[in-house]
Image 1 (cartoon, rainbow, N blue to C red):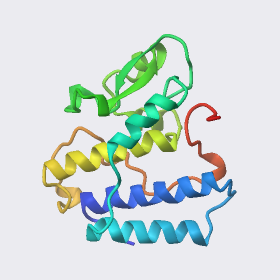
Image 2 (tube, one colour):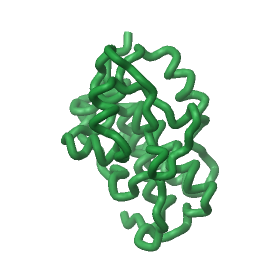
Image 3 (spheres, rainbow, N blue to C red):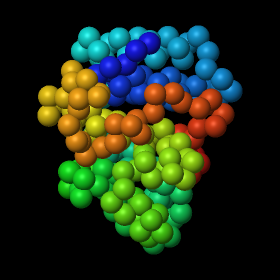
Length: 182
């Protein structure tokens, strides 16, 4: 499948995210027919605008019920708020863009894009963190009318287009969140 526009890239990654979330929830070791169907239907629905990604309010609710820990390493010590999409790169200074980060990760990440920073550490982001990131990226792209813009012609955006994952590791290598959810 050829992905050419910003919207197709974001929708494909989000559909892969749903596929991965389904597999993790089912405790599957590999993706199966059901997960591929979820991805296919969600991708088509997002592109046709008959489906959507859901509200960031769902992710805000999760912030209140998930264990309070650094979203990057899971530490529960010396936590502070971090901008998932850095304000220095144009990310919003809003609660939707804030996540918990320990002092060490926050200092190391600095003004880097979260996905780029995790990739430099050879880490795939936890599914729930990536979900928030993609929702923010989709929201920004809608606001700036970038969804139909070819990736190669896209202007600079606050998030990293090259870091948006097109393929996901097997479910056995993914984490829903950085710490075990009871």
